[in-house]
Length: 306
Image 1: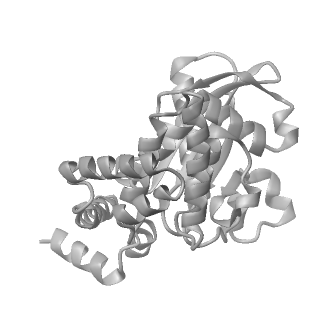
Image 2 (image 1 turned 180 degrees about the vertical axis):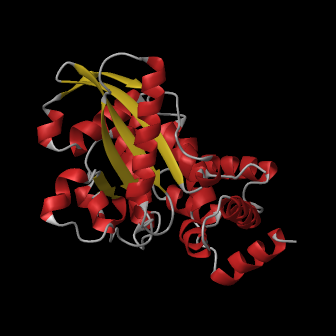
């Protein structure tokens, strides 16, 4: 069964645009890093390093850049669970090792390229876990520090971003406005702000198809929102956009992506839980990843033993 994942599609359709990726880095990379990286020659790698059973909860994009004249990589891991995954540092480390393994196969000589790990998160709860591997390890005596492979990732917790804290223009701003407000009470106002930006882009004959990308994402990802609600919001900015939303909603209905999204989401979580249990993960770990209740995990485990 193919898991319907609107988050992954929205993330990749947005940040696979070089101008959007460049805008994100210009506005959000620490200045000390930005000064070292040449953003004029960003190359988006095609490989993904997410395990199949975790694709509903994580997405990734790998960018090749030049850092002080040498090949380096910026690795974006997008977590679209509703709350932070406690073992994200282990997950990231595994993906970085996978990237290095791939580079070793492609280029057997020379040193490994530098990888800068970055996490983008927009869940319901604010990020409340550390950004270093050592934060989830028992206290490390100073005498042992040199033997421990610690690292730190850059965190972009969109759940905590207010409208005033959103940087960037055009499609980047729309992307961040929607992600940062999806689970918030001010979603309507932020959606209308995004719509104003999209209208300006349309007048410049830019990002016309991105409107449909945004609407499809919202209708599939935001629980409790009917397409008529979204149309009413859009009508306050542009009646033409309101009509377009109705057209998109009809397309989604024909594709079975609105009525069946709740059922499909549950079925997908059950299938993922089954796969994770087969790999030897504990009930607690599967609960943390899939957000299914313990009772449901125990039921799945019991059925798989027969």
